Amino acid sequence: MKKAHLSGDFKDLMKGLKWLQWQRCPASFEVNNFDVKELVVLELQGSEINEKWEGWSFFKMAEKLKYLDLSFCGSLENTDFLSAFEKLEVLILNCCWKLKRIDASIEDMEGLLRLELGSSHALHLAVGADTGAKLPVPRFCLRELPAEIGKLKALQQLDLRHTTSLSALPNSIGSLENLEILDISWSGIEELPNGIGSLRKLRELRASIAKI
Image (cartoon, rainbow, N blue to C red; front, side, top):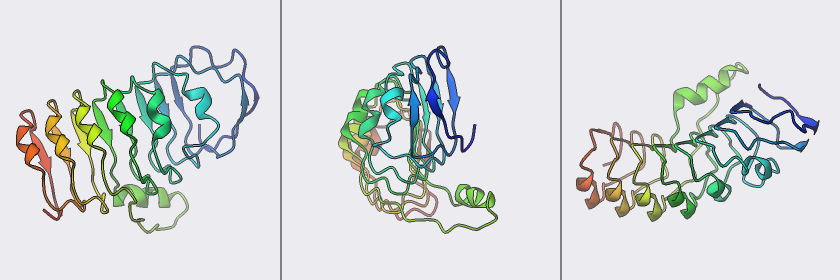
């Protein structure tokens, strides 16, 4: 569903739901008894929500959640609320331009396979196509990654495309023993840490138009 405004009592209506796609959901949340404990896939692309959104109190009960897409959620500033989703395998935060901080609790996502924190000029123009307008690409606020990211031992893919305000990678990046794809194309990264040589399974390093 897209741009849907839900309200009322949802008792027994959502039980057993595995996949919810709710694009551009509003900042207000007026739902009671929203039982999504069995949810595995959650897609909230382009929504007006932030880290204090009331809906998180229900979604945090989805302990089986493996796939979370928050692309284009332009009001998000940090990821503290994600600490509840320790079973995540895919986390997508592309084009969350106001995102200033990745919380250290990301280290608890031991099964995370794919992490996307980048942007794409093409994707942004695609969003503008819905209104017929060409939208300017905002500048990213994210300036650093936490050292705890090195504890994501299962991580296979890290996407940092177009993170123009990110100038360096933490040295702990060398501890990502299963990393296969690292994309820093069009990023502000100026040099690679020494630990990059420890990535024995790395098969693709994408660095087009990067500053290194």
